[in-house]
Each structure stands twice: as C-alpha cells, then as structure tokens.
Length: 394
Ligand code: SF4
Ligand code: SF4
Image (cartoon, rainbow, N blue to C red):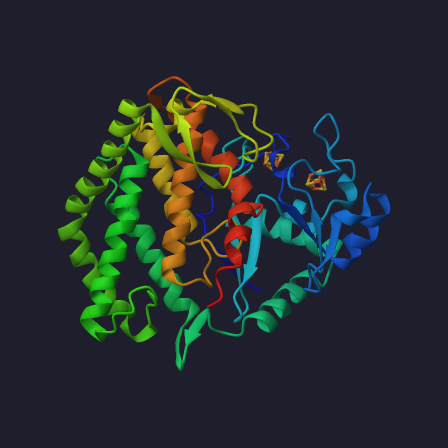
C-alpha cells in the first residue's frame, strides 16, 4: 500500500472534542456488513438505499443529525459505528495505480491535545479499519479500477493523467499562496485568483491550439509544463488589473445594496433577493451550528480579515487543492469544474466567517478557524461534493 498524505505530517495535533459535528452528514456510506447490522437497529428502513458499489454498497440517508446520535452527543452504536466514522477526520481515496491518498479534515479536534497527526496516526486508523473489515482497502481499490480506469478524463483519443492533474493542482496550490501577500479579504482575493487563472489558461490554450474551445480547460500531459510558465507569466501581468475589476464589481454591488436596501445573496442553495435589514433563519446550512439567525447586512458586506485569519483560509484552500477524493477538489474533474467549486468554497467560507463574527466588522483567526472547521467537516461529509458529482461526466 503506497500512502500519499495530502497534508504535512506532524504539522497538526488532533484530539476528538466530541463536538459531534461529524455526526450531521448528508448521508453515510455503508458496507454490506454495516447495512446488515444497522438496518436491524435503525428506526426506519426507508433510510437505506442500495447502490451496488463496493465497498460501500449502501447509503444511509441522513441530511442532518445521524439517527444514532443520542441527546448527549454520543454515538449509540459506537462499537459498531461505520468505517466512515472510524476513519474521520481522515478520508481515503485510491488512484487506479494503487496509490492511496489520505486527506486530513480540519474538524474541531484539530489543534487540540498533543496527539501528533503523522504517519503513525494514519497507520493506526488504517489498522482499526482493517480490524473491522480486512478486505476494506482491497474493495476500495477494486472499485476505483472498475469505475475509473487509469485516466481522470479524456476526450476523443486524448487524455490527461492523474500525475499531470495532481502536478497542476500543486502548481495552483503554490500560486494561491504566493500571490496572497498583502491581501485581507478572501472573497476579493480568491475570485481575482480564479478569474486570472481562467484567463491565463484560456489565453495559453488559445495560443497553442487556436481551438476556441475555452470551456474544456483540459491541460494535456505533454503541454502541462510549458503551460505553467505561460500561466505564471500571464498571471504576474494581469492579477493586479483583475483584482481591481473584481474589487470594483463587488464594491458596486455593495453600493447598490446600501442605496436600495436590497441585495442578492446565495442562501440555502438558491440566489435570493433580500432586504439588507431583514433577519433570516438558516434552514439548510450547518445544522449543528448554534448560529442560525442573522441580519442580512452582517453577512452580505465584505469585512476586514485579520492577517492571520486570511492566511489561515489561504493555507486551507492551498491544502484542499491537492487533496484527493472527499474533502478535496475532485481530481477526476476538468479544471473549470475545480475552479467553479473553488468559487463555491470561498463564498461559503466568507459567508460563515461573516456569520460567526456577528456585528463586528473584523473577522478574527478564531472565527476563521471555526468557519473552516465547520465547513470542512460538512464538505468532507459530502454536501457540496455530492451536489456537484453529477455534473462531472462529459
Ligand atoms: S468533528 Fe472532529 S472533534 Fe468533533 S466529534 Fe467529529 S471527529 Fe471529534
Ligand atoms: S454512526 Fe455514530 S459516529 Fe457515525 S455519524 Fe452516526 S452517531 Fe456519529
């Protein structure tokens, strides 16, 4: 088993705070053995769906609080809890060549206690999973081979390899950090980053192929290295200009909202027109959160971020770009999907930061950490990833 950690080993400590935030998933993936056990103790049979994939042949529909979580936030079936619960905050994903990628989710227990998250921590979790089901990792790999043989995606007779895609994501992960100096608002910075990367790729691909098919944004193996240079050069020339465009665009929307007292906001999966003085209750966001009601103006207008808070968010985005599988940007997806999902991530992060900082105009490191912890737990558990998954095939 060749393990690749997508986080820096030894950088974090972890101790479960028993906050139970990981017990509010959209759904739980179950092996056949887990289904057999849980279907006997579950209150309602219709919660389960058969999906015929190994090793997770079943799903338990949850969308909120897990039915096995008791009033004291303890798992009623702890000794028999599913493998996905044993593994958390780690998530595992094979590439078809047998490399097993391990992501580390930034849940509430990260940074707590003195248990170091290193290779030993990962091996201990793998052992625990194997004790529960010795064939689990073999099945995970077989499923990957069966569903997705060898290339993340291809068109006609051209294809992009995983290594090429990973290397490109690493390149983006470095760039997002390199250009983040002296920036304090994540929405303005990261949307400027996304816009400039899109333009840089489109320009570079056009120069090479004159294809006009800008939407595909595939980076083919043979052109990847040269493209990085072209993107770097385009980026260094255009970033400032794009930053001003994005900044101006957001400022204009904020000015209109101040004058008309109405704004458009993405809430509960839809763009809604709301009055900025209105008080709104969240219906589908993080159900475990104690902050559910807010005034629209508190989350709509940009706030200043403490430098540490901003850097924390950029570090997280940079790490998520190189994660593989749940909790990361989809390695199997074309780049334009990755950039779309990145845009959604950042909107969600800023929304949550603004929410947690309440009436204050400054987002602190503590609030940024809390936003990332809650969202990463939620993302890792599948909400955004699942919602997007259906659009990946083309
Ligand atoms: S979210 Fe993290 S800290 Fe909270 S209960 Fe789950 S594993 Fe423990
Ligand atoms: S089975 Fe237990 S550990 Fe897993 S989500 Fe439900 S309550 Fe939490």
